[in-house]
Image (cartoon, helix red, strand yellow):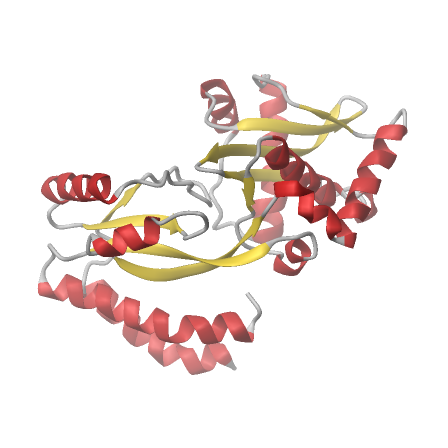
Length: 290
């Protein structure tokens, strides 16, 4: 029903966006992953970055993905520098101070599951290698493909094994492996910035029985790792009810766009997109409990 009602709007909007060359954009601090964690830059720094990029790319919009106001004044500072804040998605954060997540029954059940597998001599174990072997990288690529591509969408980034080797070697991501009998059955790749921990790389063997609780173990280890580091979890989007039942809280994430230097046609495209999304996003978020 919603798709049919929105189809004419989307079609008309698409024509406006194409005519406004909306794909011509420079995306700042974009690591080509699902969630970008930004430092809490000052207004002066943002103004300088914007000025340099406008001079270097006069025909392109300047955009920042994954902008949120969780413990950050970044949205307000971007707005003060002339950026439009366009709602992008509803995301979730898990506060870890004082281990308040343990007040949730589902989290305690996950913790009991982990303690149970640790008590089993043949159960799962967590390892945190500082570097990855070729064999480990191949297995991680397989687990990522099973979850992100085969289960969810082939439009997700299709990382190869060399990506995991390089991100581990350079320290871009730290990896946690959930192993049993010498075989990796689940993986977490995470990084930290400005009081938050995000895990854009996860995967598990979806051919194994769901009763093993591999995804529950992944979620548990992400939260525990963040708590140990004194950080909140940026839990991205998806499976919202699962995450909320384990202490996650909802925030809106924006794409911040600077288009003041562009042609009238390009500015019109961005302002139209901004107006349409800001008018329908609250309704969709409420309707689908995003």
